Amino acid sequence: MVMLFCAQATNVAAESDNNCSSSPYDRLIMVGDSLAQGILSGIGKEHRRCMNIIDLTQVSDGLLNTSPEGWVARISEVLPNDPAENSAVYMLIGTNDIIAMRKNRKILRPGSDAWDDAYREKLERLMVGLSKLPAEINWIELPITDRDRKTTMMHDRVRAMQEEAALGRVNYRHLNNHIADLDGFRFYLAREDGTKMRLRYKDRIHFTRHGYEFLATTLLQGR
Image (tube, rainbow, N blue to C red; front, side):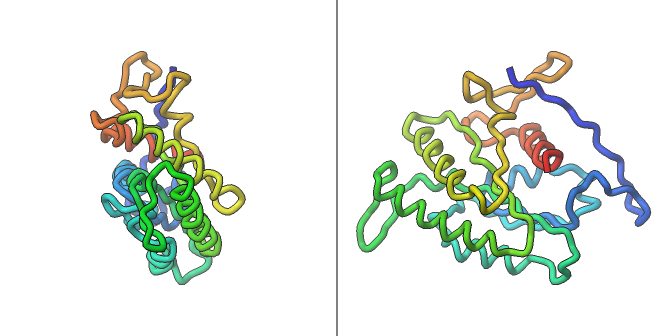
């Protein structure tokens, strides 16, 4: 069973002499869809006081709605001018990337070899662009889902292609080892005191408020 270990937050006041050592960046840029937006909302006050947090999330967005070059351009516009500023990009997309796409006047159906090839090509362009940005790039693993069989299969497929494309180019941040176990998808996490925390929303894709807080804490502590 997955166990939830609650980290104690560092109390940080607003004065300039306060300790911000628990916050790993000067600037954090969150990029992606509604799942990324949820993780952003889960970042605690102790980090918000110490980091300049920029929201580049958009509900229902993804690699089939915005081009690879479009994503890179969005991020480039908010990167700091000062190279000494410690900046990081956290990116999570893919939940919405399970629909048909058009290429050369042909409709490519999800699950087909032609669709896979076209999606890999988009990922290749995106990863090349991200790897050239002057910031730490973190690609967040697409969380495991448990919807209908076709949706779950496509999310698994997209996740595998994303991890393959990220290899050697950006930091690939695993999440599912924290929110799933040998039985796969889980609605709850067990706390150390034996109580349970509701992790996932009833649609079996999104997370609860406590779930997003857990993901944000896990990502920042594991940096």
